[in-house]
Length: 221
Image 1 (tube, helix red, strand yellow):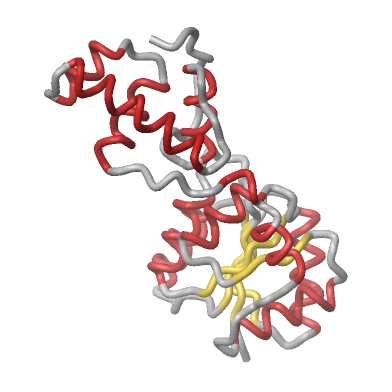
Image 2: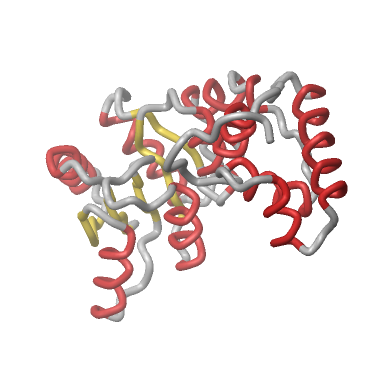
């Protein structure tokens, strides 16, 4: 019997999934609203990690999909994202962090169970939602920024003047300015132009360089 943990901040979703999975002979070892809650409960019980974790793409506790998937995979579980598969950026983040696949919340329960069984057997989950979300994400081609360019973009896009960015990184102002120029060129080359500072912030958020923005920076610095 395979074990499964359900992590979703909607109790009604968890209840429906738990009932269906138990009928399919899964051992539902946890049902809750957060990854930290699950890991804490597992630690207290000295239990083995669940074979499969069905994880909502976005939880209401402020955590990111990247950190949630990373923690669960590191703990020893296979992760299936159970969510609406119309957010390609977040889906990409989940897959990059090690999720085994995606199953839409609009899918029949039988399909969700089949996905869980597939992953529990150690097989790849190649479903339509996953393929559509990733293949259709043509707007987010990798600009392949260097480590230094990502550092400059992270600081500059969130509102710091370029002079302050240069001081924080211990480089000349001209070097920081050259980095911004190269960053803009790279985004143009992959079809994602960022002519303004607001555009750069948007690209940084899309690529996970900046997790969220408190305000929209103005101007191009």
